[in-house]
Length: 86
Image (tube, rainbow, N blue to C red; front, side, top):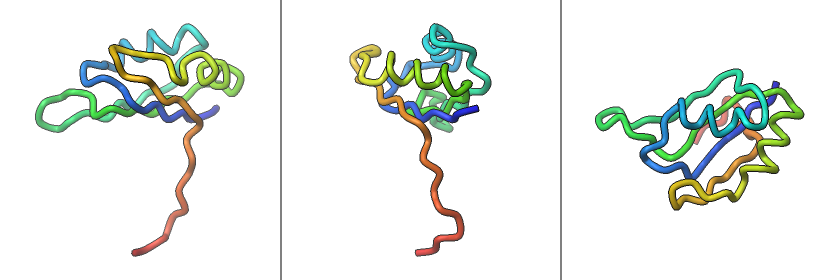
């Protein structure tokens, strides 16, 4: 299972529309769309989980693709180091 970061999403994006978009490349196992607390609109990014080969196909097919005038960024999630303080 691979976790993907999807950025530069339009404010009107929903979990359902994002699932439909990515299901062309395989089964979306989980999805977390960042939403504004007050308006409920998309904050512009999401995290998805897909199988490895399906995730690679989604990156190849959707990275840089225009979605409602926004150029999507699709890549593997990069884990941040835990325990780092400022």
